[in-house]
Length: 174
Image (cartoon, rainbow, N blue to C red; front, side, top):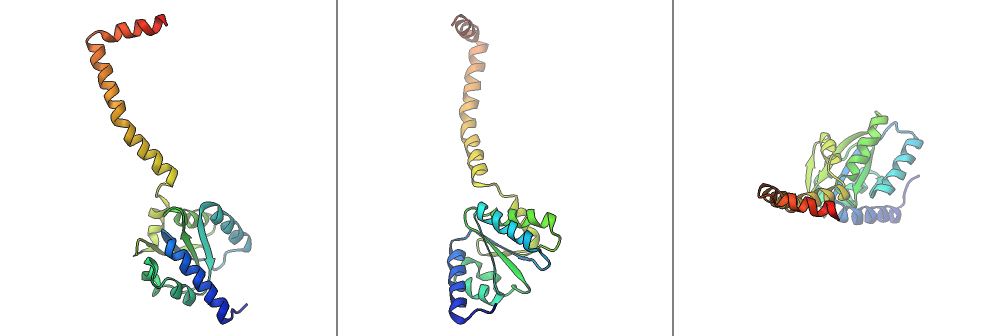
């Protein structure tokens, strides 16, 4: 179904708004993908904070002007599916990589992060980025390690001086 001018302007405005807030963009060729596969991909995208849209490349090129994704506007050719990560940078990469495993027709073509145009092979690097929860868990481990090392050092000194035996007897009596 062809869009009239006002509908095209709405699509461009919507994409521009999403692109202004997004962390990363993955554009993938989707020709040959079944309706069921696309429906499953859209459902998974909504769950993982990815804005997924199939639009004409000219509209996408206009939408990314003035955003950090402007670097991709000259390489958008062929039927493309646009996946913008809105919550965490690696979400779009994980989505495309996951669905490309079961669908050989789905191929990443363009990857852009922080205003840089990257080769399609970087979708694997993008997909390997930790989620927000994983990153927070890593940070917590890093912050807790010095305290744990200090506690082990104090215990080792106490054991060496014989104070560890008294503490062990006190806990055994309690």
